[in-house]
Length: 312
Image (tube, rainbow, N blue to C red; front, side, top):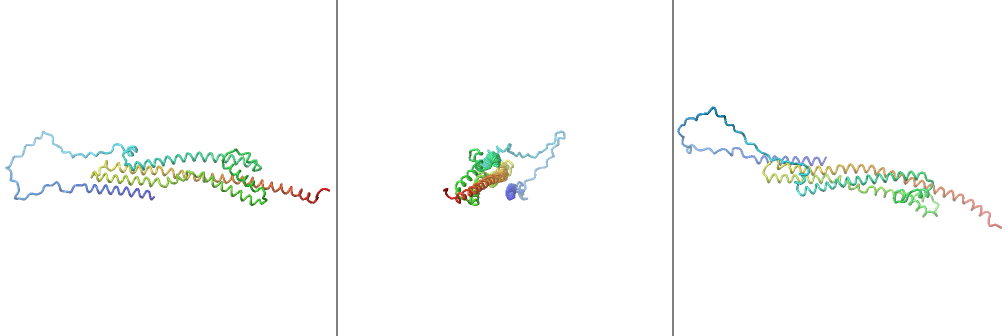
């Protein structure tokens, strides 16, 4: 709404400027009339003459008003307007065109990256749910630097460091902390590039508005130099100004739409990463329970050995 109000204000200023120049260019009324002469300076009367005979057979002479020829611009295509624009307006248009190219490049790259990452994560999560232990899951996963491999390695490292401890709650909390940090890092890596879309969507309309203001200033300068409100003088500058505005909107609107699209899609990706983290935690909990059962089975044998004492 603010951007539309600024555009409407600029157009109103252009109309007022053209109208004021047109009013100032009109000749003063009565300047072509001859000054009246005094009676003393009246020219002597000429002797009466007979009126000339009218040739009724000759055609009547018709006086036509002279036609004003306005040299309108022949070509107002976008390319011709760009070539005839001021250097600063051309720089603004080139910058906006580059921003549009960057927007669509980020869209294509993130589309491919997100599709591949989500497909890989779904396949690995499905394979992980069928495993009985964390060791089997590590053997099942292919080698690489994916999110699921990082989860499994982090859980194995913590289990190895806590192998001499029996507090399951503390071990689970430490592993959950590691996995949470890995989730945050994965989401942050997937957000790379989307900040550029937000910047383009927020600034491109105002960059185009700057080109619009500059083009209208050039139009006013052209009107003042030519001392005319001819359309051939006014139209090119205003057309260039509006072209800069259009290019700003052309760069900003897709950037905002694509940014919102990726924000929703990355949210789905984060949910999928959270599910994978939960799968790893279930495997860790299962391994800890097995370790506890194994310790309970070993303890009775040790107690019986201690009670029996050394063999005689």
